Length: 388
Ligand code: NAD
Ligand code: ZN
Image 1 (cartoon, rainbow, N blue to C red):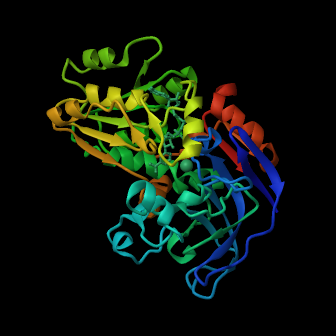
Image 2 (tube, rainbow, N blue to C red):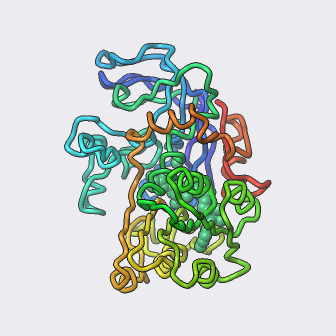
């Protein structure tokens, strides 16, 4: 089959690789019908994750048709059309039982390497390096889905791929980020980053009752899309975001702040970290600008919600301000499994049409150009869907 493979920093290629097959009784094989490129893929493309190996298949946002299944997968049939969460979870451990799916204890076959770096084992992810399980991703024609009986959401007839594809990741991620803010009537939520995750966070904050959402980015098209989602916007290259937020909130600051940026790879000159990253699992950066701004801007007693991905040690973190203001911090990989059904219902009810975020559709063969366009935000790109 054809698959998008990682070959190094800024180097992905469409290779011919062996088809996946059933390895465990709870596996299923999907024929991929749609898959997307995510901001998290850019961390791999930027070379920040040192446990990627040449030839690893990328992609964690995908859906498709069940073409084969293991003997223990009783709730799926060949031909079923399903969406799969980007996190891999067994469905039965201490954490899965508490709806903490992205903290599953059983999905990384060799958790030692992560244990060494972090002192614990998180859940595995599709297409996200050997540190996180080494599972082949879904930017491919076929993929093996472990624990398919627990993972798969069957899609009812009448919904297109594009309407439901983002249930795999960015819709639940934006939604969880907003839910973490415990939004009260009258609240103002500030969101750093108007990429796909930020866009879903804006709409989710309103769905959860925010009175005002203020979105911060530097890319005009992304800010325009944020305004279409009823956000007020700040271009941080034109004005000081911290000052502007203070002014817009009568000096008190937003009730909650969402960092939907994470590792700031783009245009911030972080190339040097690549070499560091290769040497160890520790990423050190003194440039978490968005995160720092969010802590400083948030009102006393407010909430800081961090869906943006960070790795290793992040320095120059204003822990003093965070402590002194009594902020609540919520963060982590999204517990996607938990949101599949409720968010599918919201799509069916018409609360949101997730297709708004798609600016590009391409074939799988065009993925290398897709990564370049998405990384550099060329051609007004916000979200790319690949059709294998
Ligand atoms: P993206 O790269 O398309 O968007 C990031 C946006 O942040 C860009 O528009 C960029 O211009 C903007 N930005 C950069 N520096 C900024 C700053 N200092 N202030 C304000 N904006 C700034 O990525 P995305 O797909 O939207 O993902 C966003 C983040 O969420 C990434 O870190 C991604 O890895 C992470 N993510 C996390 C989860 C999770 O489970 N927690 C899931 C998916 C994605
Ligand atoms: Zn993603």
